[in-house]
Image (tube, rainbow, N blue to C red; front, side, top):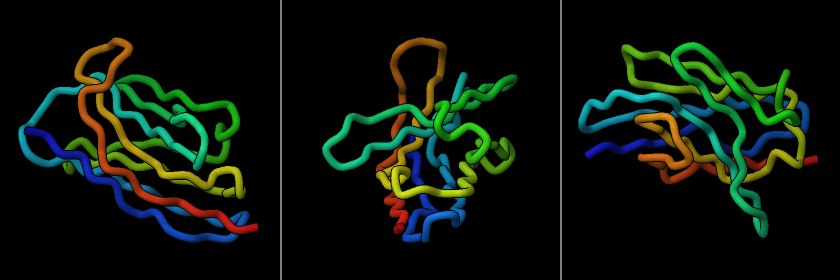
Length: 117
């Protein structure tokens, strides 16, 4: 059994920063990618950023403002979010893929990020 737990969300003013964390616990697993998604009220969940062993990928609107990183030894993944905008307000989720493909094997419960104008 694998659990992913996000933390670090909160309320911040526009232009501010937050760092989200995703901690893995339970059974050790090998992973192909770790990803961050977000879902705003009334909108579909969308991809924000992803990291594999060799590359990173970002939603265009967050590129240059958000940075995804990992600490393998701690089984932790991070999303540093700078220059936050009100449109970044959403529940943020981390999701892990064990192999490349269209689906994700593990999801966290989400952490709320609210950016005030």
